[in-house]
Image (tube, rainbow, N blue to C red; front, side, top):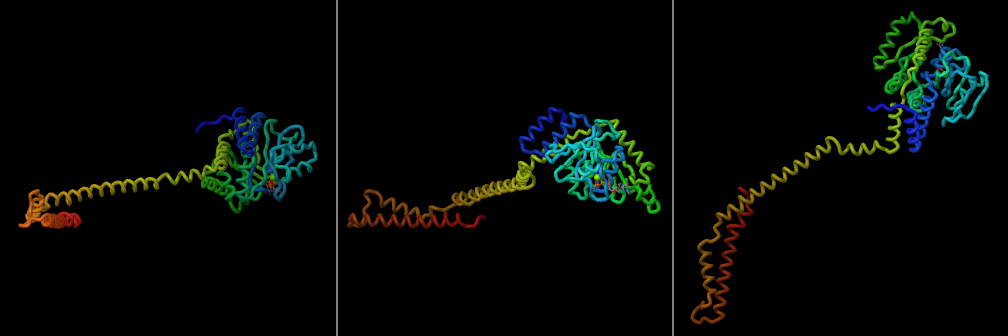
Length: 399
Ligand SMILES: Nc1nc2c(ncn2[C@@H]2O[C@H](COP(=O)(O)OP(=O)(O)OP(=O)(O)O)[C@@H](O)[C@H]2O)c(=O)[nH]1
Ligand SMILES: [Mg+2]
């Protein structure tokens, strides 16, 4: 496969091309990549089922409290948390900034995070996050179904995430939504880490921790999932500060930030774009049509033609043979000049001589009458002989 280098030039060309083709949404993703590359931003994303604790976890890891968290589905739009002079920029679905808030009012900022009527994404700059200026944490709305997951992958901001932390709550790890989402993530070769949050709900007397973690490994293996790591955390106020798993996760995030290994999203986006082209130009239906001419059916047709040809040639050969045997055979043996016919011919030829005269009176009329009679006799006998010796054998069964 040819690797596409995500240079600014490639992105600009690609953007212009997609725009020209009317694939606005895809052009928008290229623009995102272009801006991310230009700014040199390293993005850590958080996704998962709603109420798993994503926003709480980001607040904890970033050392802030700006993201709203609540037991009911809360985060309604994508929030990019950055370090900088405090402000919030709201974008609509066309990625156009529609409002800039310079407010330090937490409630106001949190309301923006929950509003998805006009706002589709939000950039919040805070002075307190512990991470460097070129790093951002991305919070995403919770998902509840495979459809939500698909939307999150195709319409969301997965194409901007360098490393994904997939957050699940303790009670809903092994769900269909989680496994199918993570399989899509693997397909896109998106590096990710699994975070099992709300571990305060775990009861050792019901199941030992090692048994629980073994069941998680088994589940991952059964779906052929290979996260970068698995972390067990709790954001419960009574445990948050002391929980070992939280510290391990924080260290892991720190390591990721130090290395800042960026993900090249262009190859998987190119696949997405080519799919969009296929849909736009209805390539699938052409392929289906072509497929009907391919494979066994055509081979079958060819075979049938070949068989027909063979049958035809065979028949032709047999007919030639038949003709030779029947016609030539009896022609060779046909007795078409029996004695009586020879006599008739002789009599007729004799009557045709100029000096031929019939009887004593040898009138002209009598001579003509005799000539006619002999000709008729000869013709009748010839006719009978031919019928008997030629026509009948030629139309009879072949032996
Ligand atoms: N017991 C317990 N509760 C938690 C934990 N983490 C978060 N919560 C609570 O769970 C609820 C949901 O937390 P959020 O941080 O809003 O979860 P979220 O994943 O961001 O949810 P959405 O934005 O709606 O998708 C809140 O009431 C949190 O206080 C945890 O580890 N243990
Ligand atoms: Mg949230």
